[in-house]
Amino acid sequence: MKRPDPFQSVTFRLTAWHLLLFTAVSLAVMWLAEARLSSILRARTDHDLKEDLVELRADFDSDGLERLQEAFDREAKSNGPENILLALVRRDGESDASSEDEPWEGVVLPPAGALEMPSGEFTVSTVKHPTEEGGARVAALRLPGDRWLCICHTLSEEHEMRAIFHGVLPLALLGMLVTGCVMAWWLTGTAMAGVVRVTRMASTMGREHLGDRVTVGKEGQEITDLAVAFNGMLQRIDLLVRSLREVTDNLAHDLRSPLTRLRGTAETALTTDAGLAEHKELASSVVEECDALVCMLNTMLEIAQSDAGGLSLDTQEINLTELLSRTHELYRPAAEDCGLQLQYASPEGSILIRCDRTRLLRVLVNLLDNAMKYTPSGGVITLSLARKDDLVLISVADTGPGISEADQLRIFDRFYRADESRSKPGIGLGLSLCQAIAQALGGGITVTSKPGEGSTFTLRLPLRNDIPR
Ligand code: ADP
Image: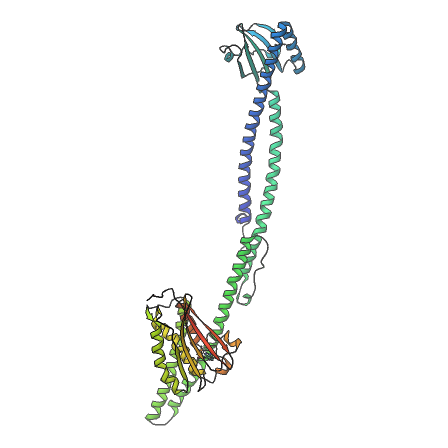
């Protein structure tokens, strides 16, 4: 077997797809998480700034400018003057009170957006910071008398939080990605092990390994189903090959005797000095032998055709009660000649079905011929017709020698003849043909028998085409 390219394997492809999807989903999750984190941090910063403004205003309203300046200095000291700027400014930018504003050079207060808002309103905006890369957030509260209470705070905290996030999340995702890939590789590989087993078995299978079966593992229902289905297919192939072998053996065996007889007859005709009458007799026995051979081959062909579903049916409406009554009338004299009694148990009323008349008669005739052939003189043969649920049952029962249980399982096989029957003429194809036709008609034949008591062959046909009277 050609060594498979590992990059073409389902395991590799599934893992690669898994990796691709996982990466795409991880990037999307990272992006969403970062956006959400940024908006939460920003909202928190703005909320804190506004709260500080409200507190400072309260201080200013109750204790005046001096206490406000003290509060500014306190805040600047605890946060670091480079991180915070607090100021009470006028429209022209002049401040009445302010924390250390040197590190905030270039930052214009009040911010442009706050100039036209009414007294008591807030604005929050982002401005550039001389040293802080992320900039700063400015919150302004307009006070009466054209003054603004402002707090500027650098966004270094947000920046730090985002840096932590950027450091931790990719590592976590990478860990998950690697674990996910290893798991995907392992799981796919385990599941594919069943497929590999089936493939190996299929590629090593030969005539002599037809009895081998794939081990059914525990990789999952689909793989189990595949292995079971494959084993089922092997079983059917095995049976088919065996029955083909059997048929070929039987055919060779059954052809050898008539062909040997034919050769013998022809040889006799060639070597004998007898007259025309004897030559004619030899020729007629050759014709008879040939007819029997042709008949056997035709039956074989018909069975094969039926097995392959290629039997063409001429379906028509049939009154079964009438057909069986006529068959009974036709066969009764022949049965009586053999010392047999042929009875017909007909049902009340008529049973009409749609069926192929000729094929149906072929089955009936075969079953009746067998009953007459195997039942010793003085016996009784009963032909009967009945309806059961959606089936029509036609039975041929005899009081003949019966069939052993082991033979009952085999009499429908091609060329099979029970040992006790070998004294009677026949080639063992009649019941195979009957079964093949019955199945082509949508039904089947079953046998019940007790050795020494007789046999009953029952042909069942579907009543779905029954025509109500
Ligand atoms: P054949 O009659 O040519 O041998 P069949 O296929 O018709 O072939 O029958 C197969 C075998 O089934 C017969 O050889 C015989 O052993 C058995 N069989 C069939 N019908 C009967 C019957 N009515 N009673 C006893 N045995 C039967």
